[in-house]
Length: 218
Length: 218
Image (cartoon, each protein chain N blue to C red):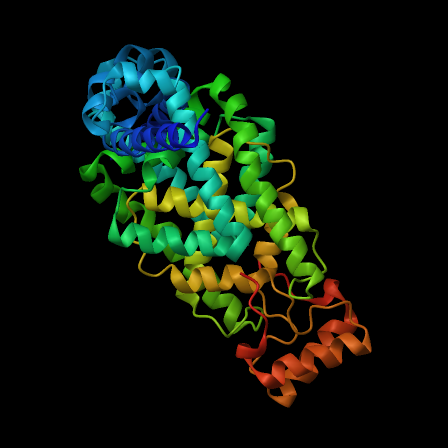
């Protein structure tokens, strides 16, 4: 296939996903009719369903797309940064990013088949988080008294809480310092090492030099 | 009013709430028809709506009842214990306690009027949590480098995540050690004090005597 055609296909796919995102956010999964999908994407149903088998496939591709972008941020900056992004996005565009996450939550609750299809896709966020934490542990930035699996589950649980909180429209102005607590609680902390004299000395250095010298573990 | 009659009223009210809880859990708010409420409570609609003005009032009374019981556990044992109870309850009765919380979440998302009515009721859980944390701080069990308000929001955010997690039917077997991390992160921790020599010495004692000597801050 010539290069230009591949680019064209990718751009068309992007156009459909962007329009569908707006549509699902605005109307929910059930309310996102084919007609509304046509309006929001600016494409005919024929063009849309040339790229995606059906509405369910389109929705899953969208959710997967979001999960991948979140995983990219995790790989670069950690899951706490994903949460900070959610916070600031929710201030600027209260409903923009929530659409797919909310629909995912709702359908996980009510649709066992969807739950199975979703499980493999959500796995990549978990994998990215675990990999990032392993890397941080190797760099000596992470607490070493709790397993990577537990820390991963901990961060994911807080993310779920944040999504639920924002989705319920509860005030989020006070959550930045809460995320600071979350971030700090996975860090290697003075006094939290194995208790060896060397560990203690190292911890005291961190203490003396102040917070700015603690490596960033986001 | 004679005492026996008051007891009778309270028991009848209890009977209605218990039946309604089963009904809302099983069918959701919309699906809990008056006929189903009659079946689950074993009472006529006349008897039910003698005690509660309408279905909405019944639902709010139920949600308020749950919030009060949670606040009681918080006052005695802290919000992390509420989360541990949710975990073990969800193992024994996967859907039992979730009913009202789920409906509350859904209606908070979709019903602004309900949001306003709910706000005052949910306030008591926040108040109980804040009061418990203040008490723990006075007892020297709580970290003192983060405000009570931030720690309260932190614990509530994790609670929301847990409720959402369980509601989505995600596996929860691995969450006990996660709650240990949460609990530990609000505690006064060796090395987390203001850094005065006295504070350091105290922290080292805690270190030396081991975890079992750290006061329980739940």
